[in-house]
Length: 119
Image 1 (tube, rainbow, N blue to C red):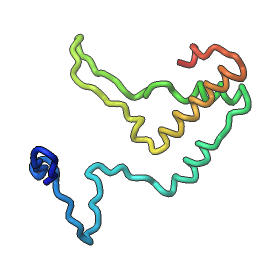
Image 2 (spheres, rainbow, N blue to C red):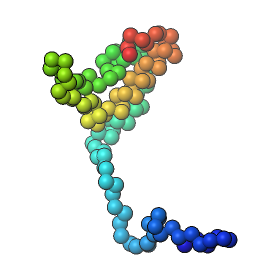
Image 3 (spheres, helix red, strand yellow):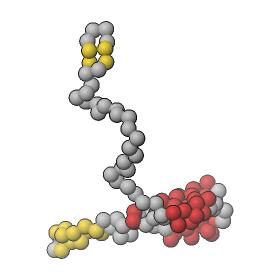
């Protein structure tokens, strides 16, 4: 309850009261596992600097801009199934996308190339 100059406001209907206990804090309902054995590889990919135009072109060419596995299955013009993008299941997905972005930025900023062909 909060007392103001005019009225008393009761928050118990809106806010859960804080109770101090020595119980451990529960984990969030949605937990994304982190693979600790891949952490050195993640750090290496994040720290990788693009310094060669040939390497940048190779990275931009072989890391796709969109997930290549997403598909709609149609039969006689009717969509019967959808295969969702599976790239997010890759534990190194964010690092590869970041590496591709750095390669494209290198090609634009340092080499002055048009990257429309890589998109």
